[in-house]
Image (tube, rainbow, N blue to C red; front, side, top):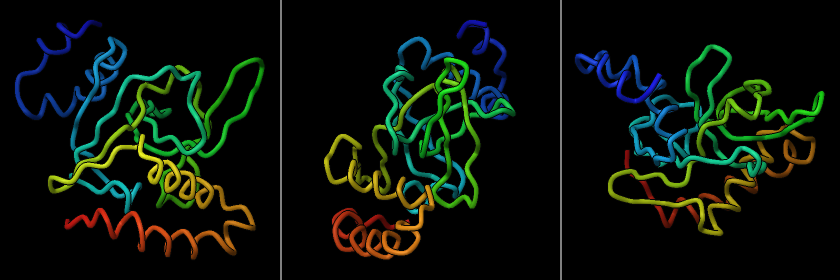
Length: 176
């Protein structure tokens, strides 16, 4: 189904919401960057409901641990969560994703289910990009914490929270 077909089938705001996932997948597949308002709390405090997020098309072959990706889950919905692991099975690479606030990972997803990569967040006029070294490091800390290894359970959460409060979040104080 092409973009024209999707757009022609939209008759109002409710229809737009129903077709957003389909339209987003089509636009990303055609090389377009998306900016949209995030919904939900699974990636707090980094991404909060209402934040403007920028997602760029990606080559799933160059996804790294700690990247935040937009993917189609097994129910067919788009989800923006962090990559915390991967595995190879039968010659294919699978990605393990998890929301930062989720108790359990989402599961493993095939490469073709990954559609885009988060590159920036904007809240109240403040913009952060994930190309900045401080945010690459903060993303890595969040990924290690999400993996729940014994070291990260004992040491990293407290140190990571303290470091994030004193550096990243102090500089980019977002008022919700």
